Image (cartoon, rainbow, N blue to C red; front, side, top):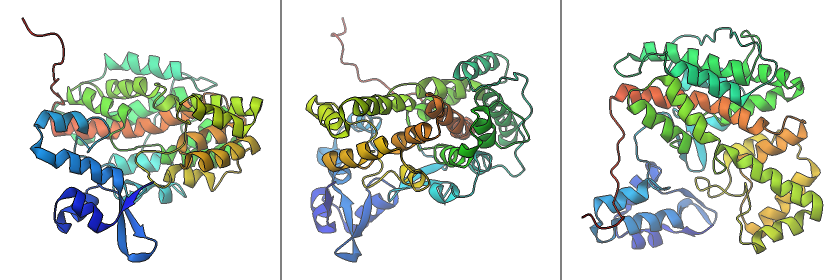
Amino acid sequence: MSWLTAEQALTLLGTKSQTLYANVSRGRIRAKPDPADTRRSLYFTDDVKRLATRHAGRRKTEAVAAEAIQWGDPVLPSALSTVFNGRLFYRGQDAAKLAERASLEDVALLLWDMKRPLYLEEGEMRRKLPSLNAAFCALAERTTNDLPSLGRSLPALQGEAESVLATVADALAPGSADKPLHQRLAVAWGRPDAGDLIRRCLVLLADHELNASTFTARITASAGATLSAAALSGLSTLTGPLHGGAWQSVRSLIARAATIGAEEAVRSYLAEGRPLPAFGHQLYPDVDIRAEALLRCLTLPPLFAEVRDVGEQLVGERVNVDFAVTAMTHAFHLPEDAPLIIFALARTVGWLAHAMEQATSGRLIRPRARYVGPPVQ
């Protein structure tokens, strides 16, 4: 990771120090204490260069917008979550600290700004095992029956969000409604000893700014669609290999390591020009705090530990949360798709929070396209 002093950052930006500090406070530039002098700060080079390029030559609005929607500045205001100085916050509360004690239900109350206890009604599916297909079907069936989100009060939407979460939970964490979701999931998999780590995972994965699935859910809600439709669109996006499906790449890496050894597996990925899966994260220049919070409570299986050590040494990046959740799945002998099940259940809380925030704003998300096709006749 490359870091700049304040003087170097100001030179690149061509701005005053107040502007630099404002960009840090808004999360546009990541900063950390200078190890040589803790009274000073260092600034993440890539963030500074991005902003410097953005401001150079007063570029046209469409050029700025095009970059902003691809790992640039946040494109929408939100009071729900943010990553700041390498830490994840839910409505100003440190998510890693919440994971020490909170449940997913607690996080729902926080993110949904609920003023009353959460109530998840008993489901009717009576499934024995978690099923992603069941979640898709149940949400799809609701979308044509639920009321549109447009024009409804927040309390009304909160009540419906409870119902949507109960529907998803019935499919992904079958069990009695009087038990917390992490216990339901652990029992459904026959591994009650994994309950506490599942709880931590659910809390840490509940929301993560405007990731791909959350942005999709907000677009759906901005059109006035039902909350179940917003959750369904988020769930569909989550299944992509660059998002919630990243665990499969971790499994492939571990499988290769089991065959040819950890170091040779990592070297083979790099020799093929392939990025090493689950190492590094663009929002966390030092370490994915979610992975760190989980790995503190988990003894890594030997092969995972070896791959982590070799990968961090050769790549210079720390493992991220996808690696940690996949390692937990292996350590507790959970089903192969457990990472995606956990991710989907947790993130449903975040999708619903963002859908409600977007719906109550009354604004349609409708970017313009910059046409690059054949000349118009």
